[in-house]
Image (tube, rainbow, N blue to C red; front, side):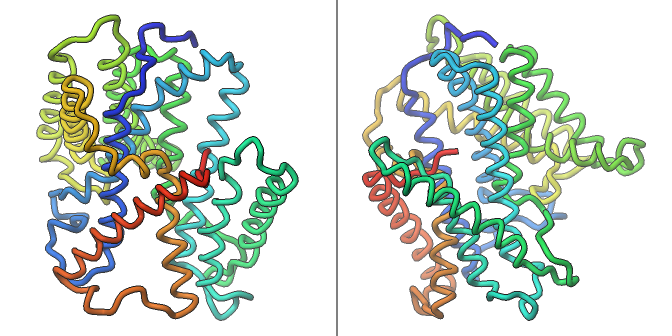
Length: 396
């Protein structure tokens, strides 16, 4: 892997803005999921609906942004002088951390036998959500080294203990990846994409070929009468390549925008790729439908097109027109995405453990619930602003 000399070394405000907006909407829809009497267009569509809402684009947007950041992250580490071994270790540790956190979150939701556990599932879930904070916090250089290691290794020990305290509903001890959770799926998709990106040295044509491969594997995996569909290992790989499709799309868009010697007023390759995403999704829809839950190729392609178009709009506003002031509202989330994803769960289980209700039931139904969800998302941005100020930031 060589340093990409043409890759922009400037801070890209539009990527930060897209990350911040995505996380804000993510917090909003996660809170909204607990509100009753909400219109269907504000919820995930059912698996067999052959349709998607803006809620079904939030997860793809997160994957897309992960991909957009990969070329910059690799370039920064290469410029810094990190060895291939250091980069590989960092990549594996980041992916493993996301997978571990994701699995703990999934097991906190369901699949346990509360009557056989030594601690209540609520306390178990509270600790499972809270421990990643001391483990992966980005400690400042002047932070006491002894206390740092105590918090980190203490948090790891707690997670190990939680694993053995967990009793499944079938009576077995220990957790299982019922599914990988949102963070776990991001971890696997990131790992597949980064490994390939490294092997092909980030070449645009090779990443495009990988994108095609991801769509093909996804399609085969959803076609029941194929030989490959019957193979467990293929199902595992193809399932994660489904989400790698969106990460890879982000990588390609970053390269098309920023890995060039001169800026262009109109980025025709990006526009052409967006149309290709739409056409591919349209052509595959009769065979697989549109479904986030099933992870169909039409869903990934339409999502990639939406994310690309949204980023292009932000790029035009922020990088071309230099209008960046408005985005400051979202930047606290952009600077601390993992913490703002975890913290609502910590708050939820803390309140549940104390049997404390933050808001009355009136705000859990209909329009008042929607307003509360927006307010909660805004509050979380201000909480992140405080956390960032006091250097409480998770860094994988």
